[in-house]
Length: 277
Ligand code: ATP
Image 1 (cartoon, rainbow, N blue to C red):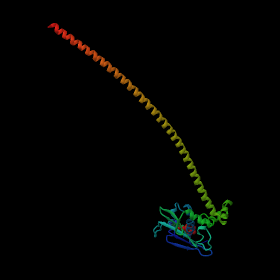
Image 2 (cartoon, rainbow, N blue to C red; image 1 turned 180 degrees about the vertical axis):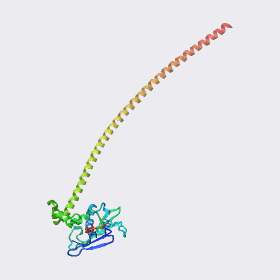
Image 3 (tube, rainbow, N blue to C red; image 1 turned 60 degrees about the vertical axis):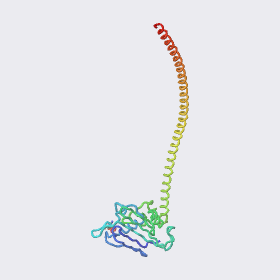
Image 4 (cartoon, rainbow, N blue to C red; image 1 turned 135 degrees about the vertical axis):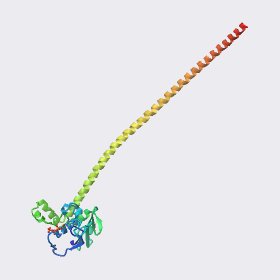
């Protein structure tokens, strides 16, 4: 695969659409200090999925959007696209059949970045993986920015290993392994959460079982209480009935006695009447 063209639009000092063709052989960009040479290299790193605004020499990623000059208004969108030619039909398996591949990154104020491969929106990770499989990328040792040569020469053997790994074409595998590790970590976390949830549910179930047992016991006891109370009321009723009966008997007896006395009084009154006549 070969990089053929970089297009910048609204990116840093490139306010207007600007194309850089990468021809066969060595391509050089020559210009005075501050004309934007480093911006071009940064645009390459950016379209490859750079996530650090600091390494783009900005405080936030939106700083890559053209901020305007005294005679040109600022922009709201920055876009960089890179065209890759795939004559030999190699590279990442899903793009192997395509002759031309375009990777594009766009940033809009307050909306963040979006990535596209052949105009189809993809995740940042997909764009990063695409370049990793081509043994390059935003952090690839094949991209050497100003002042980095010295750092590479004096690099520790472990850091140099990255260069060898990339030459061996295994950086894509590293990215994939990292992704798999992240997925594994997420799965483990989910598992832990599920386990914790299960324990909570078991605790709740035990509580509910206890409550259900207590409710059954309560129902049994309150049924017994109701039965005993009904028995007590029945006994009380019998007693009251008996008392009413006795009172009625006393009443009848008293009424008989009163009647007897009344008769006697009438008799005596009659005798008195006869005596005075
Ligand atoms: P040197 O040779 O000194 O390293 P250079 O050619 O690499 O310079 P760059 O550092 O790429 O130049 O570009 C710096 C220029 O880009 C500065 O003039 C700066 O004002 C301009 N610039 C950077 N970001 C933006 C932006 N967001 N909007 C407008 N201009 C910008």
